[in-house]
Length: 624
Image (cartoon, rainbow, N blue to C red):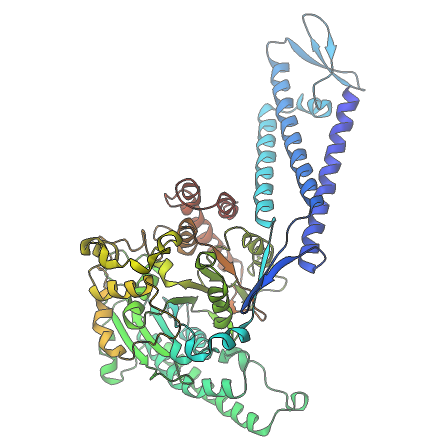
């Protein structure tokens, strides 16, 4: 019997190994087009669902049973070892050929129940070693289940921007507010922010349907000066990109290589314009670097009065219009500088607080129904990235199927062979596309397209039959408790929630008349006794506010979509070494642990809200 048990254990172990290799082959076949694919395509987007085959289902179950078997065997062996040590009633007999359990009273000998080889080794091992091994095997099995859940049915979305343009037309596309956040001109040099802003302004989208808001949490006059100079350069850079159909529209990346006239057959006009625009960019870069080295704010008259004697972390609200579009499709989009008020005695909630201020300021000034937020170091690498995102937001039959669109983060400048895993390629490719088949990808905090109504806490069930329901049916005191004391802000939210922001809605062309009201909602005391950061807006309570906000959106019943255009939508600068990588991973780990034990975390939302159980497991995977 002992030999049979040993043989069965070995057989199950080999089945586990074979099933694991088959699972690996399945994922290889999935992403190389070998396996079956199902999907559908509409006018502006399509998606591919990759279901697991029957063989994979069986092998996965075998692998799970093998894990359970080995864990149960370890537990039973541990129990038998304890029994063998208790009171001397049982003892182990090893004659060199087999291991038996002997009863000291009756003298009868019998084989152990499951794994005699393991029992023999346990005779000399401390009990705590066996218990530790058991819990380790159980933990590895749990992690294996989390990964299997995340990779079970990957979904790949495909967007068709040219079809979107033919269906809506340039004058009918919905407006989009662009959010760019920066905090420290020393850690985040202004020239990086300038390149990100220029790449967004030059994107293929009607200029009178875009508004770019830059949040400067440091209140730096150097950053403001850099953006002012960038707006002047944009008047030459954007026409150049559209005239010659430039693919990469971040100047520093575009000018990193010289054009080869002999191989590309470039015209003399292009080369002349290319040299002229490059010289303009080099001059812009030099001016910004000179101001940064001097650490002295440039005095340019009344435009810099608000920056005089400014203290970091203790200053008033600053809202300035750098460029205003006069309803020109081919011009430059709105460009607005925002630095929220900060006071030492008031919490500012880091990036989440800055995003909520941008949400309120933009609601008063342009109130676009869609929002795209990017970090200052993530430039638009694909000039049609906004069209790609809008294809999914506008192409699905139901709004609930796409509350937000997440474009995976891609990085440049990583070390050779990426020893620290800064590119996140495995996470973005295999795990990300797998989670897209559940309730949707996680919120990445950058490269995210949101419906403004979901930022306001609207759920799909609340929007059903919403045409006859307005905010006017709610008490004014209740609305002020949620959104604050600004009547103009409450009216703007009513426009969005009531679906009055239809395609073709024009921006407010009188932006200057909204500056004073925008400063009020950017005050450090505005959010007191409101629901900002708790029920609406970007959520507070974690260093990874993006993940916590995504959990809230999924908990309301919304789904999300993963958009991975080619070339990559956005590119960001990768950490340059080990210490920077460890700092970033520490921040992510701390934030994820905060979310795990938060009252709005995935465990609570699964039982009290509409977060799906498998989506909860996907969030738990981030903590393993």
